[in-house]
Length: 346
Image (cartoon, rainbow, N blue to C red; front, top):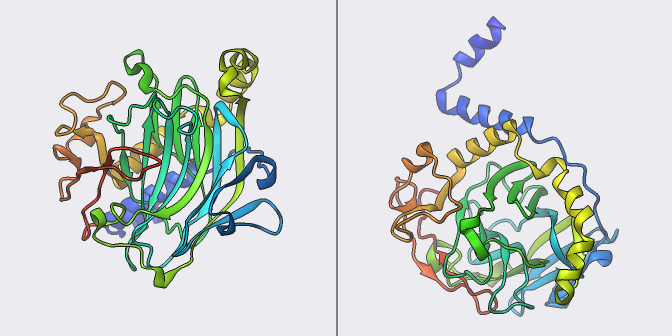
């Protein structure tokens, strides 16, 4: 023990903190007990069919973006709450202007009152890392965006990592591998802003040159195409419903809801909460909860953590710099996005 302490004492403080973070993440990184589903059993192409390439074993799929089209897939069913997950490997090298999205939505059914839960991965110029954001909408509340933006503690282009969305009647948890990075607890004050209608699972890759990288400064360069995102070990756990028969179907979902809420990943344990706090301290660089220019009063689901608040400016960004502005991202998913204009700090 003394020898170990002497070794630790010789490590520079910054390196020690990084090592501590990695060790903490590894303690909570025990794999969830998940049942995966073959692509053909749960999904179908959404658009760009020729750029949706299924793996030989049927358990995975590649989504390609070339100069002609992007691509995407959608779950065959809609779900009233669930756990949605995939292992994903992102494109490497120059990826500026790209957006890879893994999300749940019902915008095709409820066009004016849709719900949505997002992972959106944002490409970058060569030598700069991917970044990503999470978001939440309920009942068409796109004028009240709830974006948070982050960096990763690994290179998502080198190997597969699991990204998951838990959605219950009580809470939403976003996971990277088995580390919870964000939790939203449902409250009465949220009202219809909490997603509550059945949703499908989507994955897409598309050209978001007008906003994705440094506020649109860097565009997709098709010299590097095709851009390939790989998905495998897909998970769809939830009660599949017909949105037209939602009230009747919900009665039949009771047992499945109870089972979902009893799963290991449905709760943030003390160890996971510590890992989540560590992640947010080190890797979150924008949060709408601290964006007082955007919201004079934080939205009701925000839990203001003093140690987080003091790190952010009134723009909701870290104090070492950066800015944001609002902008519509694309016709099919109209939202108020936070556009990242930082370059040097990432």
